[in-house]
Amino acid sequence: LDLDEFKEEGRSPDTLVNMTDPTGSYCLNLRDPYSRAVVRHCVQHWITTSPDVPFAGCFPTCTLNGKRYELAVVGGECQVPETGELRFLGLFPSVSPEVAQDVMRLNKVEKPLPPERKCS
Image (cartoon, rainbow, N blue to C red; front, side):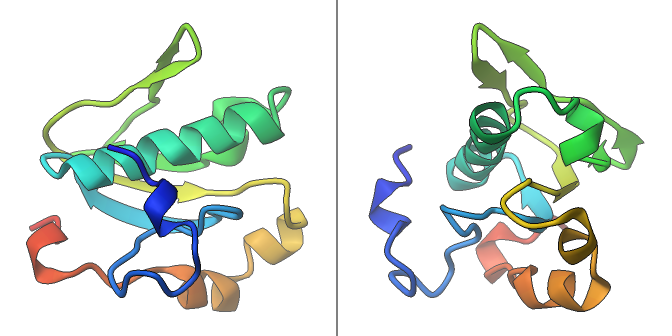
């Protein structure tokens, strides 16, 4: 799935990710190919913008079906499961850690999920 068509801000009312700064909290149903593409984009953003930061530094909370989970990256490609509920907080260095972890900012960037993409 190619996310390029969603790069233009405001292009789609149910766009779940800011393509230039995906910092935010996510709850994704991995049966949805678009949700898996969002995960891959966030991981690719981490790899390209902050390769020296460990996974837990950019994804301090990441759970799959309620259990702590670390996404596998093999050969530069993120291996995303095809089922389950993935929840994570993505913190990326395009903003300062203080701004990225500000609760008020996170509330503003958390995207409401359309009914067909809700986790449960």
